[in-house]
Image (cartoon, rainbow, N blue to C red; front, top):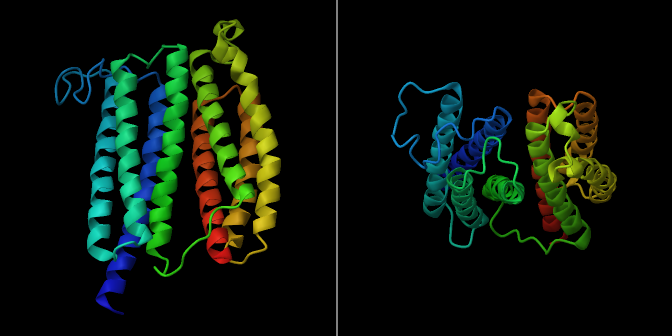
Length: 295
């Protein structure tokens, strides 16, 4: 095995570990919202309560501060990815391009997080501005996880392989997943601020009124995603990821139904988010491999 090939395999393993850690940070971020700990560091960013290390912190401060530390480590790792890719892969290689995109979306993620804190769009804030920023935050997260997953896939692909443009079906499914995920983020915010079954849930607040939108969109998309997965599954290169899309879409639908019945408990919200991210990554890689096979 040649040294360059060994280095590329090492990079692919590190990039895969980055994806795993990224998923952990995403789920941790949702836990911050669920526990109402977003204001644990006050309106200070990147410091916490105006200091580097908070003194006698409350539980909310510990949770928010821990999330900032894990996010900071993610930023360092995201910076290391393109630096390593530049040294290991030739000019024009996909691993270079996607690792740079990963770093960009990590930076945007940090900027959105800072905006939420500095504008007070955390804790009990139920404004339209928070709902919009939360939805945009989730869309950026999807772009980030897609870039990270494509970094891994590109590192494992011969550089001479070139994918054709996405067909309209694949593009439509990916856009649909993004819309459903954004609506899910808004619904999750409503479930946190206006818990189902509580007196607050009887409010006519727009977050309560929008609660019905996400299940309808998700149900329609699952049918489309399963049909799309069966279609592209006819191509061997895309089949494993297409099968994952079909299975995860059905699992996500079942989790959503249980989530409604059990009135959105925190642990189930986290599981729902994690499966959503895995479904998204599977769809991205299925679409990529299908496009590669078409050349």
